[in-house]
Every structure is written in structure tokens, then in C-alpha cells.
Figure 1 (cartoon, rainbow, N blue to C red):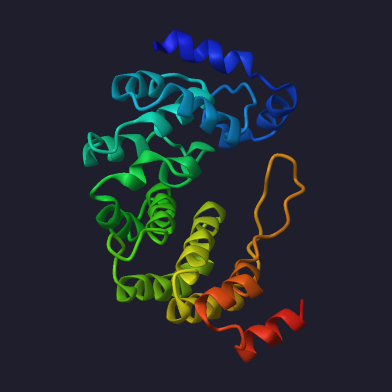
Figure 2 (cartoon, one colour):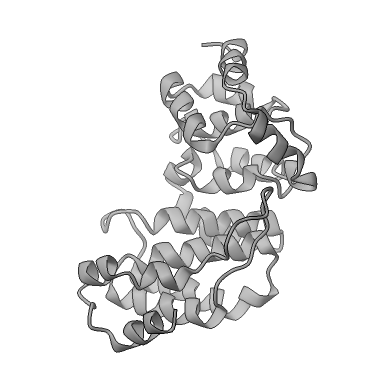
Length: 246
């Protein structure tokens, strides 16, 4: 499939309501145009296209948001280099691409250097890298025991979130919240650590194009009966108290 073929697929899925939302994003558009297509549909298109390294690189050069999202989804994680990651993160411009770049099952999280990159970017002075670092941390929290970092690694980053959360911009705070949620779902020890921080920072406020999104309540996600049962901590008194106050 060629770039022109992908652009035809994108145009055919154009959504006027989505375009209107895009137009309300202002600077978060990152200088890109959009056909208003949601991520779920873009994932289906990416699956239809399949892995294609050359096509991904060509689509990334487009000024169309959906083309760049598909580029992130179809790239080959075995061929992505750190140099490429550094170049692409500089082209996010804190826009809507940032979230998908490092999470949402994009290929960067599947590279062999994803864990090291997450640790490096989280501590970086550039906010796009910090946000992407926490996005990668969220993705690594879903790794199997064999592939994932140690509990000590995750606990170190939970502590870092607690120390720096209030000093971060909105996008980074949201990425921190996702990381806390993912880490807290791994086991009982990590759940307790992540929940303590989530309760301290409270629901995370964020803006959207529609303006209707509720704050992201990480603690709620970490205190569901289903998760507590899975982790063997259903009778935790602190979680019961927390839920009773909601």
C-alpha cells in the first residue's frame, strides 16, 4: 500500500463532528490537519494496512494527524532506533500526537529499549519527553513478569511522581496518572504505593475539545472490587473507606 492509498482510506472515514472538535483544540493541533477520525477506527485501519516500515516513515512526513497516527501504529518496533524516537518526540509540539506516540499500543513501547527510554525521558527537562516517558512507563506496567522491570523500578517512579506531580503541566500529570493506574494494577504491593499517591493528588483535571470530560480519578480505578479480588486485597480497610466517601 502506498501513501496515497492510505490517505484515500482516511478521507473516506472523514467525520464532520470530529473535525469540529479538532478545530477547537487550538495549539494542541500541533499544526496538523485532521479528518476527525477517532483512535478506535484508526487502529482498525492500521490493522488493515499491517506492519510497513517504509510506509510508516512516509506517512510521518504528512501534515495530516490521522496519517501520523497510523505511522505510529504500523511502524516496525524492531527497526525503530533511539535516534528516530528522539527526532519524533521533538515533532510532537505537545499536540494530540503525544499520547499515542508513547502509549495506546503504539510501536515505540514495543522496542527493546522502551524501559530505558522511559526512565531517561521521565527525568528530562523537556515536557514532551517527560510526558512520553510516563506514557512508556504505563505501557511497561502491562508487560509480563518476564519482560517487565522489577517492583523496585516501579516503586522508584511512584515516589518520583509523588515528589514532582504538582510541578508538572497538564499533559504530564495525565501521563503520570496513567502510569500510576498501570503500576497499581500489577500486584498488591504496587497497588498500595500507587493508591497512596493517587489519593494524595486526587482526581486529575484536564481539558478537552468537547469540554465534557470528568477529572481522571486514578484512585477509583485502583479500588474496584474486581481488581482488589484479583490482587487478593479485597478486604483492605483503606479502600473500603475511600469508596464509602465517593
